Length: 115
Image (cartoon, rainbow, N blue to C red; front, side, top):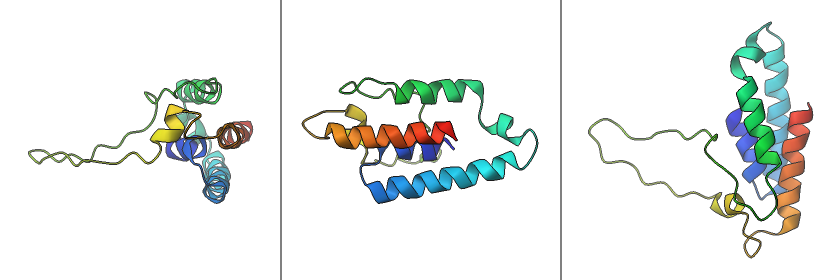
């Protein structure tokens, strides 16, 4: 759920945002079909973190401390360098991302929270 939410917030392309929102709705229906499963997966803190992300003022960098960040390092191996394709959306730099794209992403994330 966290990865889907992150994709809604960070995605610049509307087709991918729409697919993420559809996947979100499907995941919610699956979670809600088993009693107690939703509470085990989506905690109150996660919900508060998601709302804080959606309410981040435009032009202010998104706090990613609550984002899921998988570790690709293997014990004893050299860490894998990754490229963050979402850094422009997360930085909320108006010279790189238009307010329209940012608002569309926030609306998609707010729609997900409303479900």
